[in-house]
Length: 321
Length: 97
Image (cartoon, rainbow over all chains, first blue to last red; front, side, top):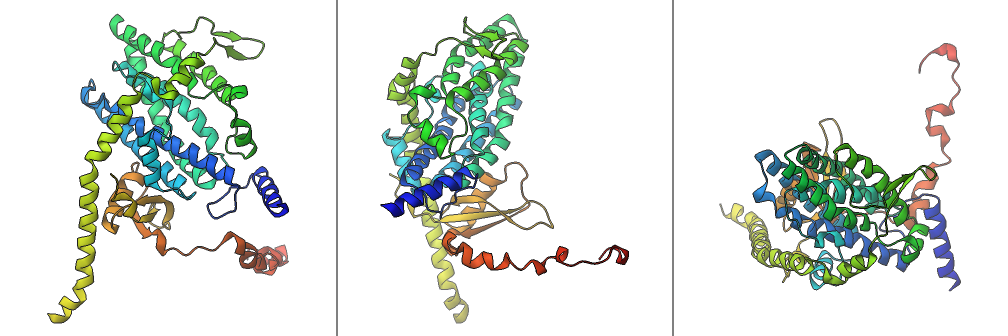
């Protein structure tokens, strides 16, 4: 008992001294479990996040827009892979994580359970959803777990293109015909609140937050990150002449931050519980892609086995010749 | 059912960013064989001209030192300051050495 206690104390002192924890280091079970849950959820979000955007690849309004969207969706696949690899260093298997996603046991970001109705949604997702994700990921570059931190550094480098291309779509639509501007405003109206919910419940409603901060997994609270994102994003909306769908939103000279209206947490928890507009559709699409890709995985395995057996039999053949 | 994937071994990916520099660890991935590992590594780790050469190594082929051995392995060099050039006092008049 005393031994365990001292190991935990040493671990705490280690992370407090801003040291990175690496896969072979001793770590508390809770730390490992928290990371597996968080990193795999993060990976699942990247993978499921491809679906709402893939919806628009064939309908992109220009070849330029299509190339950009393809590159972005390919990045999300890459980001999912970096994160699955980071989670695997903690002793969980890739298959276990994928099974947990498909069975509904593991969660992914609730934002991807909303539908993408118009092309402007591609703009809103890049600008707002990726923008909110970046705020979180920039913080996670300094997380205490080495492999997670390295994956985040790589992702952050790539992610800023995502936000800029989204803002560009919104900017063009906002400068376009009245119909195009209305389309951009409609997308903003639908995506704003779900985007600021992405940071998760308020600090007093988020039981795991305090422990994660103590372990230096998280470096900022949900509310802090949300406020930062709102402060940054409101002037961007003003710049392109769009209006945030929040009548209570105003600059507070005293706090030097924007005050904003009450978030509908009932909706948030409802979507997490599986009752969002697209929960069933997303999981079904994911499962279908996985099942229909099975023959490719099987073929690659069979090909590798065949090649290996040829290599193994080659010396004998050479000898005979 | 994903019976195949979990049999795919893990590969460590090393990328040389330009000639003259060493290959550096970029990350890992699963692949059925070395050829597919290389192809996947190209897509996963060099989408933005990060490299001109890739190595893939089966993770199982890497032997790593244990964090517990850290002191045994690395502290002996801590007290050998005479291995560093700044240990020696050379008069300024001698010039750069």
